[in-house]
Image (tube, rainbow, N blue to C red; front, side, top):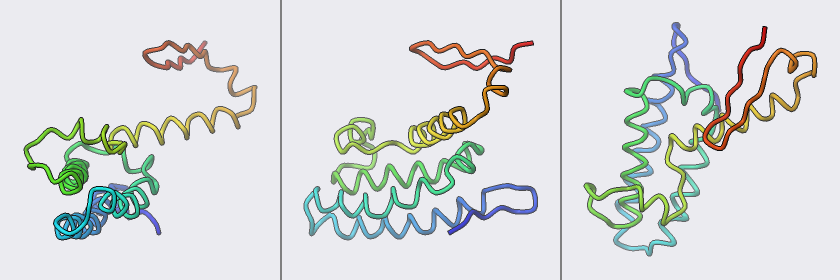
Length: 145
């Protein structure tokens, strides 16, 4: 386990190595989809993809979209293999149907959990520096003077 960074603290190498692992998983799902039912394919997906995706996702998940695109495409391919649908079919209903969180939602969820934990563990003197405004649409944290 770990995260791979280059000398510029760039996580592209980490994402590339991660993509290689997930390509193998996608190939396995592709080969298995003709032999197994959707439930078994879903079990294979949940055993491999989510076990690797969240690791340090808050650290590397907010990188350039161009770095993240291969991961997003691989996750979509995996969903297509599970559902046995055409690769051009929309994945939004498939994510909902199989209760799989798309990568960007997973990043936002993990980041929100981390921020919440950080705020709960912060001393009150530090929290006094911030004004917290919460709406149904978004949470805003503003620095007060």
